[in-house]
Image (tube, rainbow, N blue to C red; front, side, top):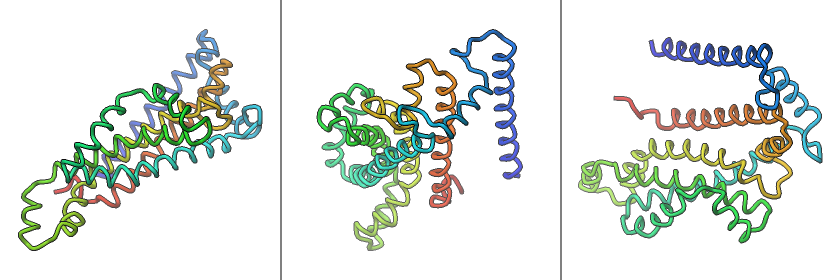
Length: 261
């Protein structure tokens, strides 16, 4: 029954995408919408093929080169976010005094738009990869940290007391009670963080970049190349979905008990 319902949802999603595509095709080929505002689907497809074969930019780098540059920045920053925010969030969730030290700084910069402090990062770290990776790192750190800390705080105190009564020390309690119980929240933070970092990618590639999918879309918009913009945006959207599903797949494998009685 569950497989059948999942199949129905997938079918509905596919039909919805097809309807949107048909409306897009009819509106641009029959209507009088200028290409600079909404390009024809066939022109976007041609732009995609051109990006793959002829490349884009002064160096004529292909789409794969731009994607590789963006994914390198994204994955390095995401990895740094995970290895720092997860343990720090768990520690702050378990020790209130540690949370009092770290949480004010996280809450201070978290609501600030990335472009607002990107100029400071450029001044401090230069215009090379360091400032870009740091910007992405900060965008992903906060959601992971907050999710980890919240996951620890939501653990039933009775579980911890029962663990100590049975003779477990703090290390055993952390590894067998706290960490497994917080895993669903940790993965929620991981999925949220990859989205935040990916949306910040364009801002990270605005300054002194000559490669990257975000830079390509931004540069094409400056030259009113709407077909390239649409091709880039669609590729970014598909890539974001794939990244999210990779983390979701890992979550279902590792936290297989979550949501089940």
